Image (cartoon, rainbow, N blue to C red; front, top):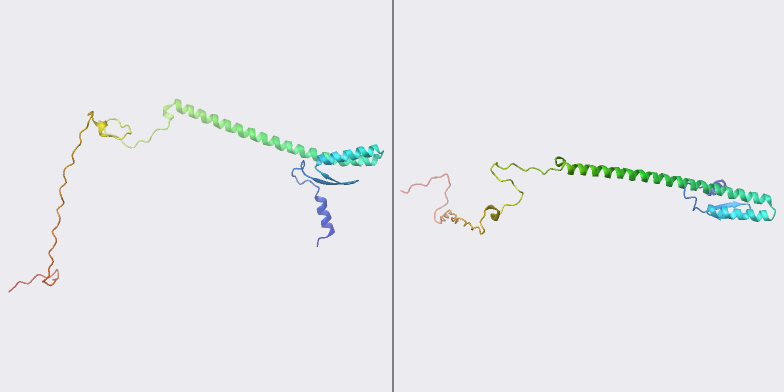
Length: 191
């Protein structure tokens, strides 16, 4: 079980802003007339209304008390709005810096590109694959076709030379009657 001290301490810390969005956060304010719940602006309006009512009923002490409560939430609200404005200005400053940096990079890139186009030596050069003989025509990178070789309108077909049939080794005749002899032994002469 929790002790009553830890419970009351947690309850007191509940109404303190935790650095979040205070402007839209809902607070529970324990005022002299009971609890008032709402956003800081709603609580300010409620305490100002209670202060006017107390003033109309000639209760100056209650009116001052309500005005002090309203002032507390007014300070909370104005501090939160100041922080939000400072964050917004900081983000806008960072965005302007990033945009200026992008613009500088773009301008440098355009200058380099313009210089590269103006000076052909700076342009990217193709890779050289090999050297052609001096008497050869410059290579255009195109595939050479029979039509591009000669000026003939109808090129003649070259006939392929006739192929000779390949000679094959004759198959050895099977030896059915003779027993197999070792390769190292010579055949004996018949007597």
